Each structure stands twice: as structure tokens, then as C-alpha cells.
Amino acid sequence: MPSNEVMTDHGTQRDTVTPEHKSPDHSPDDPRRRTLAIGLELAKRALRAANLEELLFILVNDSRALLSFDRSFLIVHSEGRSELVATSNQPYVEVKADLVKRVNKLAAAIKPVEKALVLLAGNLRLRDLPEETAAALQSFIEYSGCSTLMLVPINSGNNVVGHLLFEFFSETPPGEIEAVTLLNMIPFFGSALTEKWLLDRNKFVRTIYNRTFSKDRRSSGLGRYVIKAVLLLLLAVVIVTGMFAPLTLKVGGEAEVVPDMEYFAYVERDGIVKEVYVREGEIVGKDSLLAVLDSQELDYEIRKTQRMMESYQTEIAILRNMGAEDPTKLAESKLVSIKAERSRQEMEFLNWQRQFLQIKAPLEGTVLTQKVETLVGKRFKAGEPFCSIAPHEHLSLDIFLNESDTAYVKPDQTAVIYFNFQPDEGRRLRVKSVAPKSETLERLGAVFRVRAEFEAVPLGVRPGMKGIAQIDTEKSEFWFVVTRRLRAKLNELMLLF
Image 1 (cartoon, helix red, strand yellow):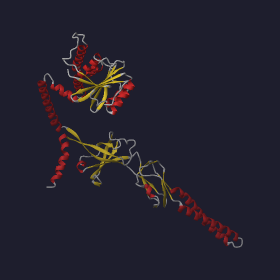
Image 2: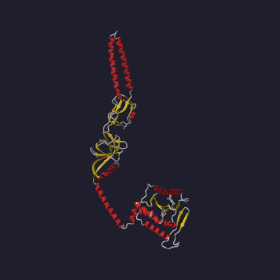
Image 3: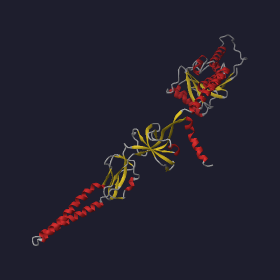
Image 4: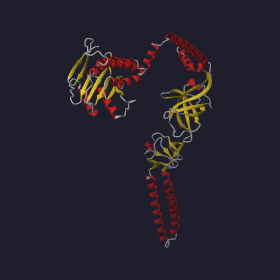
């Protein structure tokens, strides 16, 4: 049996077990023979473990037959991670337990350790270890409260694939013979752990393993070829049949919500806009205040008319006083009274016109006019539209189609719109009309505008919202649907020759 080294707090001790090293007693009760037999039995059981779960149980529980520890842990280093995978006397690892968190914290720090360590709590000497590893081990021993901690690396080839941690709470450290025997069993443990871990965690490796060691590989391979041939034949039949199967031709493109009707809020008297209270896209109610006109001109006319009325009243009083001496003055006062009455009526008219300084919404809807807030300071004439408003209950959809798709679209065909704000939910539509000629839009180029109406106007939809629409047109063969665009491109290319 090869020699083994064990790092302890007092340095490196070498224990050599060779055929020439004969014990004084060759009886079956010889401790070395008994320990070796237990170690070989553990190695055999590890190699013959049916699965990873059974192997983990052997490593952290059954190994107590060789080494009388109080508690053990198995850490595995795989795919850049170091984690606790099994602990003695526990059916599974409780990841939220404080002890498990402590061991997982220690796992990454001990990864560089390649030699077995036996650490005595009362006499720690960790100068030969990396600073991070030494600090982590010292912290764990203080947390655990064990008297001795044994750390055994599990090797597979030149790689350390895991570590076994053994805690001893009694004052007696692990026996030297048992410890060396365990180290001699580590290559078997490493081989078994690597095999079971890969087979359990990697589906590809498991498939290759089963296929390589299958008892009837030749027959199973032939069966696979037959299955593949049948599947390919069925696929060919499906493809050929599908080429001539009827299929609904769908055409579509970008779409935008538009109002069916637009209403205008009109300016009812001449004036300059003083303030605007709405913005494009804002929802307004019926009779909501949209803007107000500057009242300075109207106020000036009212003051002017008021002064004229006052002057007429003064003139009437003077003429009536003069009427006692000159009766003709009474007749003149009658004429002035008529003018005063006319001024009074004009005053009433001007005061009545104050209500028209406010521009109100004719109905509930959404403001469509762009940059309506920039109209402040602009002069409007009476009867001129101030802004447009679209009612919510009258919304339609404009779908922009390429020329090659437009010929298949007819009124009353069904369609679906997928809005950008709800891309997974389709809204049902029905085609109303198709524009008689194309128009050129930026980015889209030459397109035909198709007007469609909602079966039910969705909540939250507003003019200007966009999405992608699809129209169900006529029934066509699958082959025609698949190759339609390709043939259209070929026709375009033929024009170049």
C-alpha cells in the first residue's frame, strides 16, 4: 500500500503501511488487519453504489465504521461552485439552516487544500495555508466547538473534486491507523464520486454512458435507424399533403387607431387667444374649458359704450332743463334718448358676448390638434375652428398594406390587431373599405390604406395608438401561400432584364 502524508498542527507526519511492516500479531483481531478490511469494504461499497444518493450516504455515514467521528460533511467542487451536498444523520441538506450556510461559506475557502489536515482546536497552526483558508477554518472551528477537525481532499486524477470534513468533539483525536487507511481509500471514493456525480447531473454524459455499455447496442442501433426512417417517411407524406392543403391567406402590416369622426371647437367671436388649458392627446369632457380669448378689446368697447351712455344722459338732462325756455330742446332730448337707448342695447350685447371669450369642448373626447398650446397669441375670427376632438366611442383602424397584398382584401373580411402596448392580445376587426389609390408614407413607402372597424372598441384605446394587423383573406393552397412573396420578388427582378 503506498505511503500517505497527513498535515497536522505539529507538522507533516508520514505513516507507511508496507508488506514488510509486520505487526507483532497476525491474528484476525490485529487492529491493522481489521481496519484495512473495513476500508476495503467501504471502497467496494462506494464503487458498487447504485446511484449518487447511496454513495453520499456511504461517504458521510458508513465511513463511521472506519473513523469514529461525531459529525461529517461532504463538499463537492463542480462547475465553478463549491457547496455542501451531504451531512451525516440528515436525509437531505436544509439550505436555510445556519450550519449549512457556515459550511457553504467554508467550502470555497478550502478548495485549494490538496493534503489532508488534522486540526486541534486548542493548538491551531495554520501558517502553511493561504490566509483566506486559514481564517475560514479557524472561524468554523470556533463556531462548531469541536475539539478536532479532520479535512480530507477527494481527488479524481489530478483534480480535487471534493472534501470530507470530520468533526470530533471528544478529547481523543482520530486514530493514526484509521486515518491513514481512510486516505488510502480516497482514490476509490474519488472515482466513485466523479462517476455518480456526472451520471446524476449531466444528461448528455448519462446518455453516452448508457449507449456505450448497452447490452444490445447493435440491435438498439438498428431499431433507431428503422424509427428514423419511418419518421422521415411520415414527415415527407405530411409535407407533400400539406403543400396542397387549403390555408387562409393572411396579409397585414402596420396599423394605427384613427377617429371615425372629428368635431371642432370653434371660436365664437374675434379675438386673440390668451391662455390654452389642454394639450394634444388630452381627454376632455363635454363643455370643458379649452382656452380663453383676451378680453381687453371687449373691455375697451364696453368702457367706450359706457362713456357714450353717460354723455347721452348728461345731454338729455341739459336739453330738458333748457326746454322750459325753448320747447325745441325737448324734441332734441327725445332724439338723444333714442341714441342713449341704442347705446344701452349695445352695452347689453357686449356684455352678452363675454361668454364667447371661453372656447369649450363640444363633446367628450381626445384632443387631436398638434401643438395646440402654441396657439397662444394667435388671432382668430368668429367661426374659425380652434382645435379638433375625436369621440371615444367612434374609433376605427387604418391598416397600411403593400401593393402585392391589397388585391386580396375585400370589405367584410375579418382581421386581428395586436397593439404595441398589448402584443399578446388580439382584437377582432372587420374590413370596411380599401383606398382606391396608394399613398406614400415616410419609412413605409407606397402603401394602400385599409379602413377597418372594431367589433367592440377596447378600453384604453386612443387615437394614434399603433400595432400590427393581420387580415384573413381567401383560402389558398399552402404552396401558394409559402411561395407568393418569392414569386413577387422574382417578377420584380425580371423587370431588370
